[in-house]
Each structure stands twice: as structure tokens, then as C-alpha cells.
Amino acid sequence: MDNFDICVIGGGPAGYVAALKSALNGMKVAIIEKDKLGGTCLNRGCIPTKVLYSKAKFLSSLKSGVSGFHINKYNYNYEDIINYKDEVVSTLVGGVGKLLKARNVNVFNGNAFIISAPVKKNNIAAVIKIKENNDNSEIEIAASNIIIATGSSPAMIPAFHIDHAHIITSDEILNIKSVPEDIAIIGAGVIGCEFANIFNEFNSKVIMLELLPSILSTEDKEISKFTHKILTSKNIEIRTSVEVADISAGGRGAVVSLKTGENIEAEKVLVSIGRNLNTGSLGLKEIGVELDVKGKIKTDAHNETNIPGIYACGDVIDGPMLAHKASYDGVIASENIAGRKIEKNYSALPWSIYVSPPIGTVGLKEGDKGLENVKYRVGRFSYAANGMALAMEEKEGFLKVLTEEETGRIIGATGIGADMPELVAEITAIMHFNGTINDAEFTIHSHPTLSEIVPEAVLDSIGEAIHKYNPRMFKK
Image 1 (cartoon, rainbow, N blue to C red):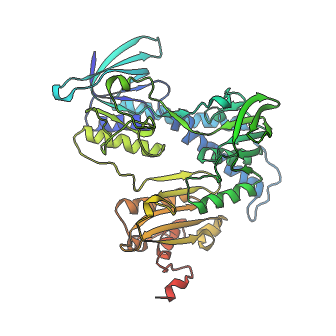
Image 2: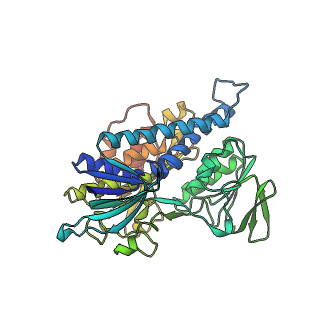
Image 3: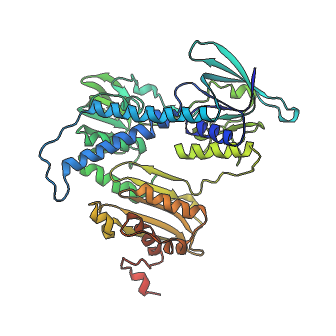
């Protein structure tokens, strides 16, 4: 039986990053992946959707035109776009494999089951059974530590009768070879809005059906309303506060039945509601790993479970289901196994939504419970007042920043506009070091750039934006 310092179960953004970091820390590492390295993010999520997003954005510029250019004729081949998406995914997945090999990480393709947990006080290693994909054989390995990073999958809601052909999830929609004439999207969260934006640009007739009163309900209310306005301006039909009773294959593809009795027919129906945790077949209950009421694995600030030597990362633990958060979790676990006691901190955790224009957020936003006992100020700056935005013909959007009244510390930001996720990355760095208004103001920004919006929005929270009139500056 092979013995390892660490066995990582799951080869997605949490797992492969944990494995690579552990190898850098001098550990002997094994990683077990039942499908393809890269997990949902590289194969069925972040990367393939951004390929389609970038192509949709380019198509939008062709259709709408830009000043000084007149394009009379163009066409596209959607199957070629999907093939390019597959090339990008293959390149990145292959790159992960090469990195793991270069760092002498042992890769096993198959399903893992934890037979026994490590017993640290007696220096007894855990035993993991692997049912290998290639020949269905079973082998066992031993590891002093385990990192569980198995991620999540689209929820299979029984009443929606997902058939993976006409009624599909975010997995299948990335592989269809032609653009549907019309598509009904169930759920107007991040996934729903991103695909609505993409397929609308490719001339699908899109209708979104959302149970809650607004789209992007977890985002800042102003961002939600702004996005709603943009999507509807593109002739995307959005219905909120509607409940779906049933979905069935039929008609031209599928039929969505609402609780009101109305039926909506579409060539494709995308179900973008919820995700299930991939933890059911690992043997966690049998070895005594504690789960919370939502079924997620309980971990401490070091990402260690109640069983010493067993760690968990990514979607399977508390916190948002984000690839970069998962990778961060993997690094935290690896460092703690290596003996460096580092506690995780999600206070400066950014996230993005790729509609057109895109959304970026970090930290607290108006309406969050974390602001109940905080005195804060709000600053904002418009793209329409930025020279580079006007030069790029990207004047739509704004950045909003929250600063703590007493200390001037930046505690959150959200915005929508061209390259907004990149602007939020700067604010994230400032927040990571507990930066203040002065830190943003006295960081020199190249001109002309969109990044100049950052100090302007920050300074506006105290009424001192340079390129914006604010009556507050005259009321001191």
C-alpha cells in the first residue's frame, strides 16, 4: 500500500491547488479525481462560460457598431465557437495535469471512499479505497492527512424532469452545437443572468422566470435594478415572483407550467437553481465527520474538521460557491498541514458576474447584516465621467464604495461597468491590508485608465472626489 503525507479527494480549484501547494511545501501528495482535472470551473463553469461571454461581447459590438466603423456584413458559426471553447478547456486541463506531474503529485482517476480516518495521537494513517476508472479495479492507499474537495453539481429537481436534452442544466448548455430559437431560463441568479446575456446576443428569444421579487437577489439592490434595466433593454423578458409547477418535454422542445396555469413553450429550458454537494459517497458519516444543517462539512478557521488530519475545502464547506474561494481554502488547508497556523478570512472575498457590462463586488454592501452596527459612508463614481471609459465607448456603469466613518477604512465595494471585476481586484488588495481612503487616494493610477474610477469613488464617500461635484464638500 502506497503511503502519502496528504491525499486530496477532488481535482477542482480547491483540490488541485491544495495538491500543488502541498507539493511545494515538500509533502508527498496523492490526488483522486473521478472525472477530469479542473473540476466544474475549468470544464463546465467559469472558463467555458467566459469563452462564450467574450464571443457574445464581440458579436454585440459587431451588431451595434462603434463610432467611425460601419460593418455591413458578418456571420458566425456557433459550432466553431463551441469547438474553440473545448480547445481552451483542454489546454487548461492539460496544464493542470502537467503541473501536478512536474511536482510529483500522484494522480488517481476514480471514485474515493474513506475506509478509516487518521488517528493523530497514535500516528495511524487514514486508508482510502479508490475504484479506478480505467479497469474498475480497486486499490487502497494510506495518508496521514486528507483534504476533501469534491465540489458540487447542478441540483436535479424532480418536478422539473431534467432530461439533459430539452430540459437542461448549466452542464449541458455549454455543449449544444447550435443556438436555440428560444430558451426559458428558470432562475435569475448569477448563472441564469449570465446565460441570458450570452444567448440573447446570439439572437435567442430569452425569457427568465424567477421565484423571488428581483433578479440577482443576493446583490446590492441598485446593482440588481440596473442589471434588470439593461437586460430588458435587450428584449430579454424577465418575470419575477412567478412559481414553476412543472417542466416537461413536448411541443417544440419543452413546456414550462406555472402555478398560475400558464404554459410557456421553448426549444430549450435551462434550470439554473441550486447545486448539490458531492459528498454522499465518501464515507464521511461512517468515520464521524460532522456536517451542518445544510449538509456541508463543518470546519474550523484552519479548514480542519472535527477529526484531526481531515480537512475540507471549497463548495463542501461554509461560504459562497466560488472557484477562487475554493482555491484559497485549499491553500489554507495545505499551509496548516505544513505546520503554519493560518486562519482563513473571507472579509475581502471578491466575486464577479459576467453580464454586459460585468458586475464586481467585494466585502460588505448596502443591506448586509454586517452593517447594522457600523457607521459608514457611501461614495460613487460614474463611468460617464472617466476619460478612458468614454474613449472605449463604455460609459455605462458606476462603482460604489463603502468606507467606515470612524477610521476611513474601506469595508466594501460593488459596481457594474467595463472591466469592473478588475477594478474590484484593486479594492480587494487595499481591503486585505486594512487600507483606508488615504491609501486609495495616494496610490498613483496611470492616466488614462478605468482604474482612476477607484480613488474617485473612494474619495466621494467623504465628498472629496476630484472629478465630481459633491455638495457635501461645501457643508463642512
